[in-house]
Image (cartoon, rainbow, N blue to C red):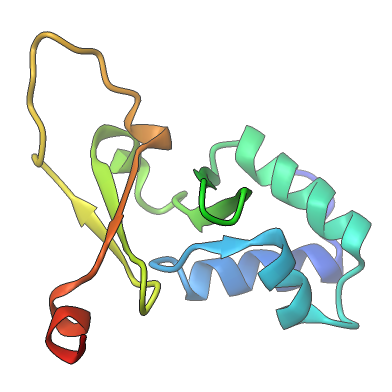
Length: 122
């Protein structure tokens, strides 16, 4: 196991506690402010991604990656994810697509729209 600094612990614990939320690096910078340096945050996000502890999804609207803690849910690479564009909540869409004609890379698949709660408010 690698050495775990206080800054890395802060990042990892926050992602674990908010495992159904996607965060951009910029959002995480704002959350941690003076607790975690920008360089440490970016390096550690890359490290966590390479170790399959977090997934990253490219948000075409913001032109940034968003990160999701998945280490406790290794099956996240076998289904789609839906992100509510309004409240930001993430849903796991298990068995949403089964098609034998395509080989889908679910680890990078994210569908965006409005969840039921936000549709009612909208």
